[in-house]
Image 1 (tube, rainbow, N blue to C red):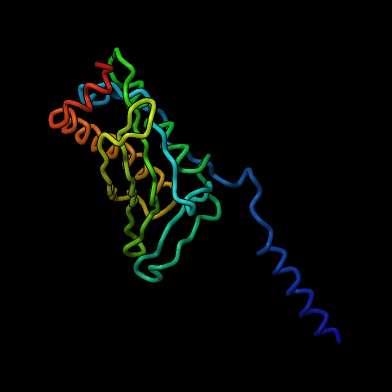
Image 2: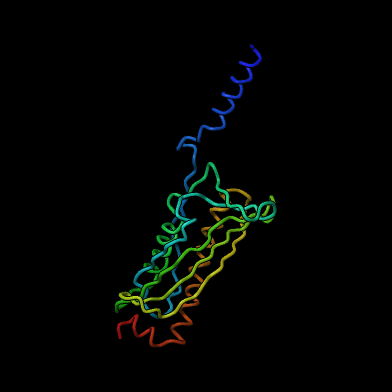
Length: 203
């Protein structure tokens, strides 16, 4: 009888230890940090950047995938979270980099609408990982939904360490890379589609 009680007690205590979630003070909250450096303006003004996300990214979970072991399973870090859902963090980052990083402009400007399709830390081995960021961008007038141009982006940024912090730093670098690729795309729009430039400038 004593042994049975002891077994149940041990199981109860183990369950309590495993089941207790970490206190809020033990969870690391990350964002994308301060924005520095000028943005390569494409030759016409961008007045706003809007970012939405696919439903599986609509939380503050920091997602990773063990591609070498269980490629179809999405997992999240227990003690690490984003300070807000990734779309919100990326929108704030791109607003500051693009809208406030360009020279003063005249005219109504256009807006960029992005859909974030993927943001995860993908482990190819136990010790090597990369951030995979997939997004679809659409250039629109400031008012209205007439599509002036659109493009999809795939950013893959190696992480400096195989952990949550390495994933955060790589995500910041991926956001920088996305802003740079978007500048190149919009620069080509400015060269190849003068009618879009005229709309953005209010000409």
